[in-house]
Length: 124
Image (cartoon, rainbow, N blue to C red):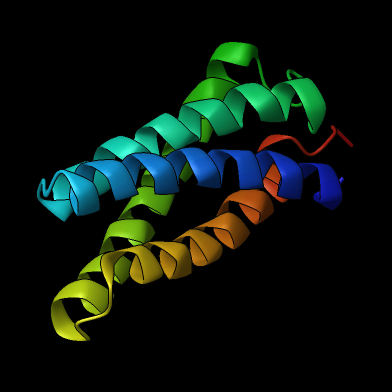
């Protein structure tokens, strides 16, 4: 299961990185709102691919409740993402894309754990 999630997460990460790179690095838009936008787009891609290829939707919660929980988990992931980016870009003066890659790795672990062990865990 983690291999499939890694492939799904990798696809979502590419969406996140490409949007972030094009909008922030190439077009010079402010990184904070760009990171928010690219993260949300990647989250949507991740959810769609996850319920098709990794997790069984509706196993523990209704689809509506499940989506709300995914967005809650993603909201925490967004806070983690933006916090790491702020520390690495603003305080440590890292390159934006290197900071984005680092933040993505941490959020990947958070998302997988929360989805696997809470949202999509089969009923006992």
